Length: 617
Image (cartoon, rainbow, N blue to C red):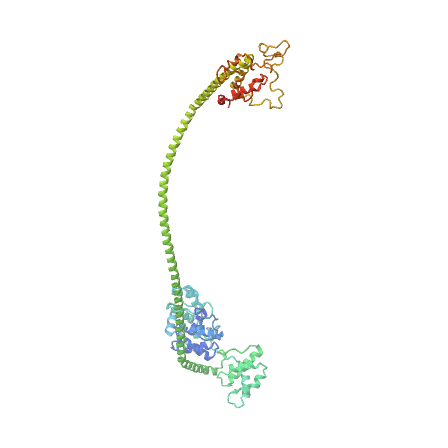
């Protein structure tokens, strides 16, 4: 993340004036503090200075810092790893790189003399007391700049180098410098860059070995330097180092730090420094530093180190220039690789688009088939609907016709019902008229039957009367009486035998007793008069076998005057057949009146004729 505040802090250290350009020498000195090998730093510079200008802008410096972080975290130094999440880079002695004590004395102050005169004039106008301005006096000047309060607060914090809550002349100049640069659009740094530290605030580095120790170490150096060339070699100091009892690795690290020129030998001051570091480990347990601080470097070596650094930088940049062509080729290869990657992506996208188009074509064909099928179905449904519509119209017409016919039929039905009702009324009226007619006809038939019966009875009576008059004049009255009684009985009385009185087993006497018990209904009749002997008939019974009143007698006038004779009245009774033979068969009354069955047949014959059928059928 190039927006990390730590990256901004590092950039302000190499570009305190905010010029937007970091020179190669300043960048090299700063990057060497990462502890990476020169070859790795050369590759980092080559990737960062892509335009081969021999300087880095802010963005390119951020790229260099990011590549340092990748190398420190074991990643390949390559542009492809710029966006890999890694911790910020670490540089030696960067925890307080801007402290006044760590600023070299020979670094020029960025505040120019003419600017310093202007800032001093403003300082004097504010009425300093004892060469110092309080915060209340400085505050109105800062607020007049119209800068945000947080920016002004940072300006005050950076300017108050001694943290006493007040500003002296040089601190005020630093504050005004930062305010003017902020008004020009430059950002206010989070910490004060070394070139902004006033020279009066900078501390000169001392030599860390005390004079007493230095004298002791110098005496030992003189004894060790056998050839008196002012240098001691490794074999010469080997016994001295081993007698300390420190590990060989620690001793080797101390030798490496003190052999500043990397010549395999130590000068007098370097020898003293080595013994000083050994003594710190033995007495205080302090390990040798990763690199020498400015105050640790012997005074005689400081100018040499500066010259060597310049030479190293020249060599580094020479190597960088030699790698420029290779870098350009690498960049070209990277561009080609990028273009190839883009081309492959485009080809892949084209293939995807082609596949999508083919799929769309398939979907189009499928949809067209579905559309044709739906159109066919639509056409069929349209035809079916048309047919159904026609059929519906026909049915509606039929229904209308049926309704009309139904109305007509209902009207006809109502007319028929009305006619039927009228006919029923007529039939009812006719029935009502017919009923008395039927009764009248029935009465007429009854009367006719009665008349016919009467005539038949009369005829029979005439026959019987004539016959009985001729044959049985004595019994004539009795016979007339019986016949008349029977005719009356069968004519005017309903069927007396409909309920058989003798069929009832629980009736002892169906006649309710003998009506003639104790009296003779025929006592007054001379015909039935009893003899003196008390018998109903005398000994001279006219119906006895010996005295048949209907029998043939000599000299009987009936023989010559028989009204039933077939030839007329002059018929011989003894020789003529019985006139009732056709009715009664071979039976005759020749045996006298004792055989009463012949009389019964005569009566039945009279009452079973067709004349009686209308009434007694």
